[in-house]
Image (cartoon, rainbow, N blue to C red):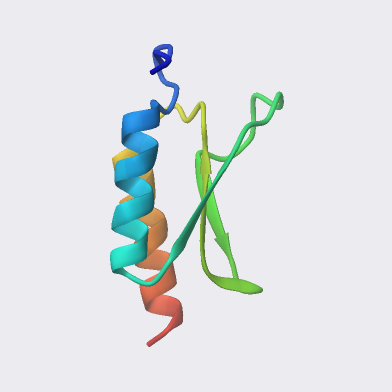
Length: 77
């Protein structure tokens, strides 16, 4: 298993978050951007079951995942 650098999403964390997303009927898409202003994560109205998570997020990936999951849950109210 490759080791993730500080602030990078490890394979173990990726598998955990992907499993957690599936429990809620959501899909996790990990992206990477060279733009230093890229968001840590986001959701879109057009993909109401998908959480996009920045591989090199400045915040803890689980925190970002939970924040974006709440947006999706509010969209489906």
